[in-house]
Image 1: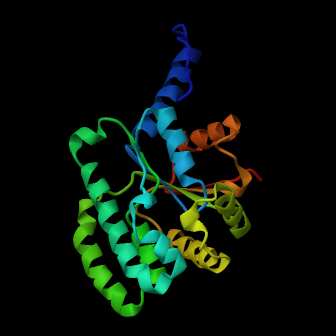
Image 2: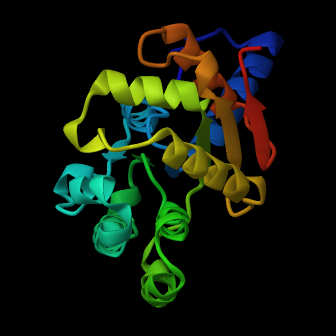
Image 3: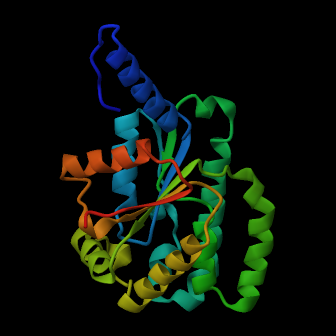
Length: 236
């Protein structure tokens, strides 16, 4: 939130203060903000930046804790179910904790939402595995809160591949262009019909939030002025 200086009590200052108050009220209603998007879109980086800006609790998933993930990228069919089950329990355990009232004294900004778990499951599990997974997911889902705002980062496949290659994580060496294409399409279909929370869709190819403060300021301005249930942000 931009720092404002005290203004003397004039008619114009009253209007200005009312405008500032409206913006403050708008951002304060988002207690739980989620940044989402396919692998390599920059969601963890952006979540960190927003948490720092707004003095929020930061909630990041930790794929390095999943012992099945490196095996999954080498043999997806064999290790898909084990990988998915581990992530489901990890995510539910993290998210159930933030439903406690004391955790919402400050904002919480996360780099994932529980619903992403089903996106990956549909992509990697066969019909029988997905039926088993769905029973467990539906049982655990009520433990996770619904986001007050979702920021969906879109990116081209070339951008996703380039970012994954630059960060050079050993476990991600097995990620293929075909897998990223299918994952990106799955995200697009999911958010096309998404209506559970206000949704800000951002073309992340056009922005560098980590290295360009103006880009981050533009995003924060879009968040703070958000009025509808679905809005788009693009540099072009």
